[in-house]
Figure 1 (tube, rainbow, N blue to C red):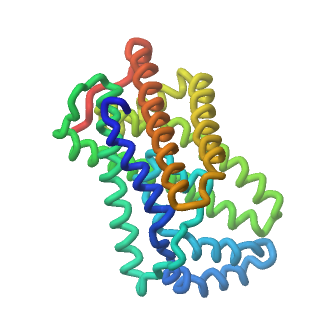
Figure 2 (figure 1 turned 90 degrees about the vertical axis):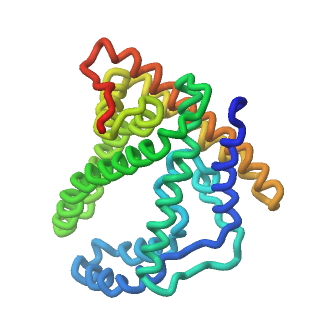
Length: 294
């Protein structure tokens, strides 16, 4: 951060936007699909009594919080779910506009994430100058990585949804047990894939190689990985909770967002250093690929 302090601006501006910007609600989508949800509720009966309330929560989501790229670094507004300070709410007047906003927000978020992560990764990799030529290729690799992860989770979640619907007719307890086991499995998959972004940024590899490296890193360093991931989670959440009392006035909120921007940048750099150091040890012990896919 001492070399490129301007990098703090992006996480700071993200929090300022989430704190003071205009919330965007997916009300049109919720309104169009509510009859289908109600029919499903009528079919499954009392075992899905919470379905309507869950759907109402979905309808009240802020579309700004689904920018997938902005999850690549921590945000104070998400860590402790700080409500927006704007009194108004933007409700797009049609479903196409809503979907267009979602696509636009994700596209911008991915681009800004690369602008944040790439120079940070160059510092970790020992590069004195930012490699501007990597901007487009890194963005493309991250898009392919996210699509690949989405495909993996879709393959996992499809049988989950089918089995959950089947278990509803057996026992609510069976559903809870199954969902608990599935949650553990999904968490394990997430952990094994969790250093894919660092592999793309620091290792300068493609998405398949990134996932392969992340899998090997976690598998051969599972104890250190659990400690590290747990520590970064505690620091991220603990820092947000400590800054919570400052979220009272606009000035103190901006100050808290600035402090958390420094913390989130430090944690992002720490993840890159963890990847760099542990993957280097694997190069001579496991068949790990280091060449980038085209």
